[in-house]
Length: 617
Image (cartoon, rainbow, N blue to C red; front, side):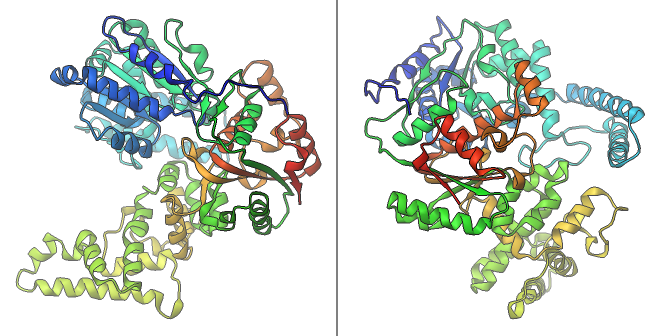
């Protein structure tokens, strides 16, 4: 495998932070795009920039009630940055949705007009599709959407104030959806002089983390804003186009960056061992000319590819891989599941391994419920994960203090209203609450595991907790095609054993060894297992079989390649790069395939793995 010799200098990227600092000079403001590959210390450079801004311009900015906006991709990233800057009020750190909502939420008249016009346009588009469509499931679904949007259109005029929850689902007609906030906010920035002035006066410095996956609408709007007001705002982007894993990010972002922007490049990978950095460079080679360097004190590390037939016993294969990695690395922590991070393509792959698939799949199949089931904010799920589960666990360990705390915090049986109605006998309220808890816990007597529906029926009968509207009376409804899609999916999902709630809760709270390839961007782990399985993933955006040469390119792939468009192979290669570069010391890839020999031949020809680094089961 070809190697490039470098002068060993772990501080070779120090100039990048200095270049970024110069961009904030009031006499010579410059916007910038910082290339920061895997393990390059991107977050450290961002924090260094924020610290410099605070020390140099902080007092002046706060004096004029101005802030520095920092847009990140996840709430977890927000929390990390806020913690590292000691929650300074100088910085407005938020996700893209929260940033845009904060910017536009006071423009209620404009919001109402936009919602009205946008809803009318959506109805017209659906009616056009309906006129060309045939009878069937898609036709019926469009009919429901048209009816729902027309109902909302009638109610819009009565809305005094539109609301939005960036961390959950927004179902009511006076709530904005996530997509509406992105589209509306971006349009306001691009088209409204008033909004542009509000933005540059409130946030004269705007920094964007993970810019390659920032919604393309916002990136386009900000680039337009820059051209009109370049002397009044500094826009700083941090990112790596090789780590673009979502389709709604800006394609070819680096080609769209204006020529007058500063473009510093970080070349170090401070995270990974030598062998993992070499693999990452080889994967990247056909994408661009960026080559990373490992630290001078980096270990050699270990990578190994395990290939197995798609019809294999996957549990057995994955146990064999753990045992093999222990022998290859002499690291006995490979034998402890919680000491290794296993990356899967889709959440339902974790569901099948952790035993919550039947709970997850019906809800995940409904577009309007996807966000809530993925992040745990679906109200119907939260009833079980945030209230019932902690209460039952407290009862099982006889933790009376925690039981009392849960009742006081969540039960309407002991709230002020309940006490007010029983002023002479408040102890009756407490007794009723504890009897309700006792009745609930009986569902688990003699080792039984109730279904989620049985739990809901029990709670509804006692009034222990408030039941979300869509779950009220659901136990008496039978799952069939004559009820709406959401109710049907809730019935199917909640017909599963409550044990699946416990497994699901552990997964979404990162208490298991599993995560998705996409969900670990920016994170790092000592030992990583990447599971590649197109059959189980059931997706169409990614194809490891094509990437690994076990399946021919489609006509669409070839057409997109010829037209310079993104392809499933390019998307998969970027995702594979992200997954592999999470590993610090050792990396195992498990490829389930229909052609083991083709995969082996392909990865050897691509210089990704040596023959001795490959095992076929």
